[in-house]
Image 1 (spheres, rainbow, N blue to C red):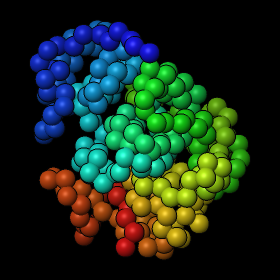
Image 2 (tube, helix red, strand yellow):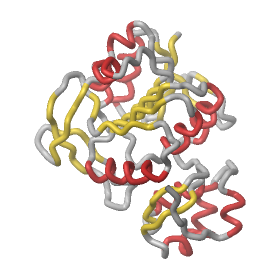
Image 3 (spheres, helix red, strand yellow):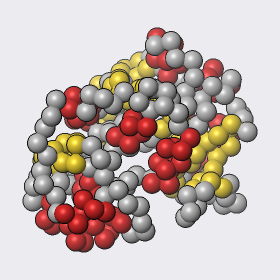
Length: 270
């Protein structure tokens, strides 16, 4: 299915594929006001494919500019992923990282876990246009056991689909499933990359994949780590032989002597 995309300033189209320091701020300064007026529309993204975005939303505009989420990680992933790679994207949101990763595994598959109704509907609409992307949406969150919980919106409405957090008492009712069960149902025995971004619910999600972790059948985990939860994630994965790394300014991985309070870590088996 083809779709008409909105026009962008020509200089912006030239620099979309490029990575450079302060790109988001520079692009926002020169192009932000002009493209914000276009509102909700289909637009060619920095990933080189069309996506529905709300350009009045600054984080959606960043998706137009390029790799706004962790460019060093995305560049690393592109190098290490094989054409038939298997990726788990938990906290897929509207697909801002998935739109890159899916293009690099044409014979593989992404399992996109997104329990939020608004975000999963948005993602589904975009994938209906980009039919060549090997993505299966699973409208559930990951946890230690199959259950029903709630999804509470904790961020501002102008965030990328807003930020949401699993809750026992507030928000829309969502299904929680175990990663092991979902992989077994699809006869998937290994995962090349797991993007784990579930706003504080990382430990339960990891507990639902313990058998895979024990056998190190997950080759890499890229996890959001905030505050004390970051230390808990590092300690939990260390018992299965996974070591945490960060990316430096040149895009190389290293193991820091001190950990930032908020960061994304790449976990690899020792």
